[in-house]
Image 1: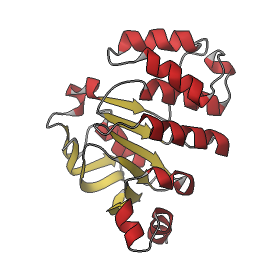
Image 2: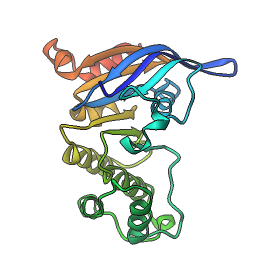
Image 3: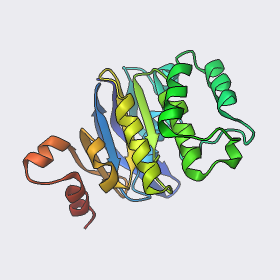
Length: 226
């Protein structure tokens, strides 16, 4: 077992971001955390990253709280940015200084694979900003990658290159949890689909099991959104 949420809920004032949930994520899988905006995807990932404290229950990464395991995972947030003046070399220097597990070689390979222009962060397009943030996240050699909506708000070609990078950098000893509502484009990524709506887990199933039943991940998603 790598990551577990045990009877976890999260309350925001009078509203609930995540209803009582127990779920485990194990080594060596790419998990699609799927649902519309407001379904609880970001809440679950922020709980997993130790950025939120559960209202009830426990979150554990290898049997310890996530805040005690910060070197074991990498988190790409929807609000992540680099300082506007940073170019590739500056991102490399910054990340190398912050994280001993950061691989400069891997980072520069990803920059080339993703075709990211070398400009100050502020001058990059939205798609290239997202790709640079993703490259810096995937360049860390950790056991768990938490990617919150890396496909949102960017064009189809940028989405394709991001999906290709995640597949290309996937290691059998790691786990990737990627949240998205762009299910059709990302379906080929997933070993497992976890579908949320209104803070509830509606479905947790292996993608190959769904396909063996004659149902795609996209169809399962649509069925659970009706």
